[in-house]
Length: 162
Figure 1 (tube, rainbow, N blue to C red):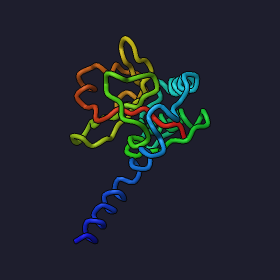
Figure 2 (cartoon, rainbow, N blue to C red; figure 1 turned 60 degrees about the horizontal axis):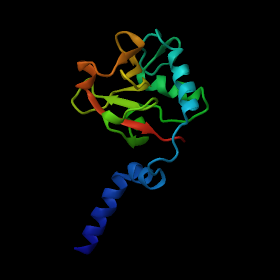
Figure 3 (tube, rainbow, N blue to C red; figure 1 turned 180 degrees about the horizontal axis):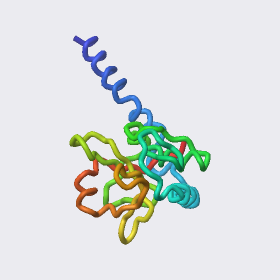
Figure 4 (tube, rainbow, N blue to C red; figure 1 turned 45 degrees about the vertical axis):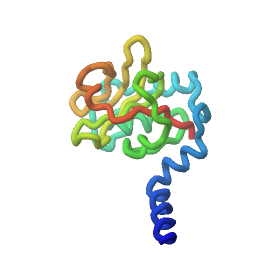
């Protein structure tokens, strides 16, 4: 019986290993981007405004939402995961009322609860806006407090500096 409990505990730890490791090594208040780093990342992301949506795209010919974040960070010599499901595990969970410049907002625009879209917060007060790659309109900024977006938020994170 003890062996089964130990096995079950190890299985749970393994299944949650990514977030478990992050909780150990990335304590609250450590390893986050500075204000100047975030401004440079946001400036880079805004260079892609108007670029059409393209699944898997990461340049001016076409870009998807996670590719926009990946490119903006890479252009500033920072390494982040490429796809939104992995990006969603790359930071500390933040409540909507605590959103700041540079936080990442994850949405489920298809199946309920399934993350398939991400945006980067570009303005935090008084009206929160975020930049993202819309499948219909390409790279653009939108207000977070629009009903469409508010109804689809799955989580918000403050990304870890890698």
